[in-house]
Every structure is written in structure tokens, then in C-alpha cells.
Image 1 (cartoon, helix red, strand yellow):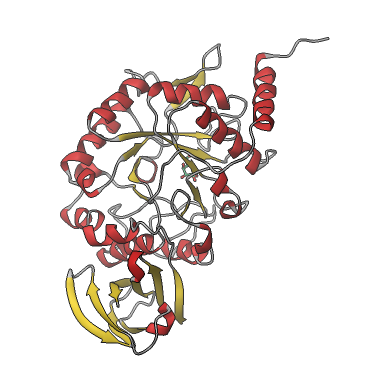
Image 2: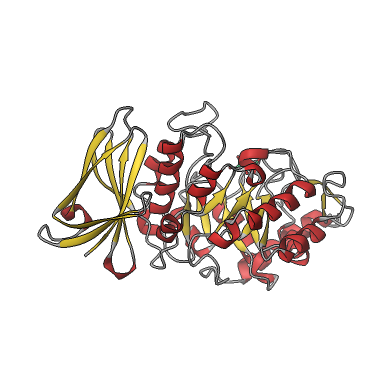
Amino acid sequence: MKSLSNRNLCLLLSLLILVAIPASAIENGLGKTPPMGWNSWNKFGCNVSEKLIREVADAVVTSGMKEAGYKYVVIDDCWQVKRAADGTIVADPERFPSGIKALGDYVHSKGLLFGIYSDAGWKTCAGRPGSHGYEFQDARTYASWGVDYLKYDWCNAERQDSIESYTLMSKALQATGRPILFSLCEWGSTKPWLWAKDVGNIWRSTGDIVNCWDCKEKWGGLGVVHILDLLDGTESYAGPGHFNDPDMLEVGNGKLTPDENRAHFAMWAILAAPLIAGNDLRSMDAETKAVLTDKEVLAIDQDSLGKQGRRVAKDGEKEVWARELQGGNRAVALLNRATTPQSITVKWEDLGYPAHLSAQLRDLWQHKDLGAKSGSFTATVAPHAVVLVTVKP
Ligand code: GLA
């Protein structure tokens, strides 16, 4: 009989382990509130290097992002070039001459956490080696490098079963004994909100975000409001430790207007979304910084109840989205998708409150108390903008 090749043996062992370990909710204690950090993809694509990641880690600290709660610094695709003879994944020696372990150590020395990217298929989306057949070996390598976060993509995996593939890597990560936040990225193609709670901490619910308000790209990329539409209806599946992921932020990447940047960020907070900045933190302007580090908006995203908001009213391009907060309060976004200013009203009944209830309102972007209101609240909202308020009975 022909002996099994190393790769086939690895695959067989992985499958046996998968069958032997019963499925259970991921118990890594991570992501009780949506993770916050930075990822290289939106701004830099494949142009990643240890120099960039170190500089960004420095900037997370000096810009005030760390103090605001951003923790993870994540290298996306293209850090890896091949496998060594023993199967170990190898980082690009030109772009990462000191190696990934040293880079992780540097990120940790800044009091931050370190994330990396791989793919459940044979190759990543950019054609680098994927983890298929090497799940346990890769997980051990990541743990030995001090990785705290893995984003796991779904390119070149057409013949694989998504639940099996992601469960396998989930088990592999857990087997390392190192808490590693597991970020699934299969773009919502097999409805991960229905099954991924037991597998990872966050799961992408849609295709890739593109840097625009409402465009749609032929390859599947979606502007901010199209992603928003797809998230409506997924709210019941999110909670502490397991969140829908509407993709990384485009705030500060130069295409959205100041109002659109604020609306994008506010809506991600209403969605209890992971807040993974995607801009160049080394050269961020004051306005971008003010959006990304706004304490009151961040407090909505990070509310400990972990409840994802939903659209509670829609009248053409005027929408009301609301999220329940701890203590029975609500965060409400009056979203104007039109290109002209609109008067938008939220009714207490749409928030699950009795109409006569008196509640204190606060405008979060204005940092201003609006006093007590009963029954409803109306504001004029600029084009492609959000008025974000908290409602406290
Ligand atoms: C996919 C993912 C993106 C990014 C790229 C990298 O498109 O959805 O977020 O990771 O791959 O190639």
C-alpha cells in the first residue's frame, strides 16, 4: 500500500480530532463586547511590512486610539509567502525581516494585542498559502508567535463545508491553550449568524465594504448603506462573545464626507459591530480622530448588554434605528439616506416604550443634553447623516 503523504496524514489527523472533540460554544472568554482595533487591508491591501505595522502600533498609542479602547493591531492578507519543508508557514522575509514573533512582541510592548490573517482554503484571497490541511500546525505557530486574534477568510474553499472548516480551526486555536479571538470571514455566504456562535467570536455578515456611501461594485463590494441593509434582521443572533461583523471601518479613508463618516461610525455602534479602523493612523486628521475616539459613541458600541440594534421605522429614505442599552435605555439613530435635509421622528412606541413616558435625551455627536421629551423626538438631519441620541426614561 502506498504510504500516506505528510499532507494527507495531517488532514486525516485534523479530521479525527474534529470528530473526537464535541462541538461547544467557543469558550475563550474573548469579545464580550465587540473587539476594537486596526487592520491593514482597507488602506494598504497587500502593501504590508513590519515597518508599517510597528509604525501603526506606535500611532495607536500616540493618537489616543489605545486610550479610547482600540487594542488589536491586525495584519491582513499578504504577510505569508510559502511553507517550509516541515509545513510551517513562512512570512515574507523581505517585508518582515525580523519575523512575526518579533513583531508580535513589539505590538505587545505597546500594551496592545496582535492579530494575523489566514484562509480556510488552499490559498488566501490574494493567492498566498491558506491553512487547509495545516490548521493545527498553523494554530500552534500563531500561538508561539503570540497571536491574539485570527481573521480567517474563505477564498479558494469552494469544495469545503464552511461549518466544518471553521470548526476545525476553532478547535485548533482552542487546542493551543492561548486565548485567540476568532474572526470568521465567509462574507455571510452560509448564514454564519445561524451557526458561528459556537465556533468564533465574530463573523462577517456581508461581502467586502468599499469606501463609499451607497455604491455597489461588480465584484460584490458594498457601500456603507448596502451593508447596513443586509445587517437588518441579524440582530437576534448577536450577543456578548459572538457578534455580527459588518466589516472594517472606512472612516478617514478619504472618500466619505464628514457627515457620512460620522453616520458610518454611529451605525456600526448601533449594530454592536467590531470597530476595526482601516485608515492610516499615522497621518489621521483631527476630524477623523474625533470620530474614531468619540467616547459617547464608543460607549454605545461597547454597551455591556451586547444587544445589536435594528431598523425600527422606515419612511422612504428616512430611517430610525435603535439599540437597547443596559439599564433599559435606548440608543437611537435618525438616519437620512436622502441627498436633502429631512425631518425625522422617532416614536416611543417604536422603542418599546409607552407613549406617555418622559425620557431624558442627549445628542451624542453634539455632546449636548436635549432635556426631557414625551412620546417622540424629531430632528432635522443633514443629507447622508445621522443624529444619534440616547433616550433615558
Ligand atoms: C477578502 C476579505 C477582505 C480581505 C481580503 C484579503 O476579500 O473579505 O476583508 O481580508 O480578502 O485578500
